[in-house]
Image: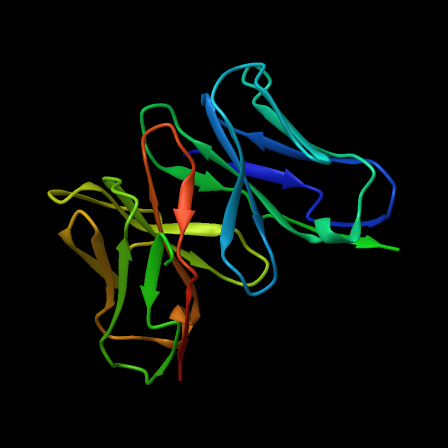
Length: 111
Length: 111
């Protein structure tokens, strides 16, 4: 059974600081997704990582995937208040066609 | 119009009642999913379908059933609702090797 662990689960940052969210998973996979959820809202896709060593960047967020270590990271650079949200990683088991979600990291960016 | 539409958006029902949540998508994807989200937790997969004739149980299917009426429509039923099925329910669709697109969610309360 695929297990996905995110840490930290809660993160309070000051604006302008950098931080990294980690997503570890337990079985072989080469497909990993990052989503953002604002309070009371749906999930929206941030990044799709489909191969070992994949790196994607959008604004102040950068995601990477190391399939050998079974680890993905979401790095936040110079955080701003608008980044406050819950971030989920989701891992798709090889040939399964379905994803298992981590419990989410709730990020609060303070002035 | 939204890519994935869920109805109703909010519903309060009594214990023992049957309820159906509906989902339709305009992305043209074959894959559709039903997830449940509880406070502080990630999304847990209830059922998923890769095409009209292919329906599979997810990790928490007990107490739920689904129907795939067409490529674009995937409904979730609670045959006899119980209070611990109170949750936020999301429908999603995806293509192969691609991110999921989520509906806006249905907030279900069972009293």
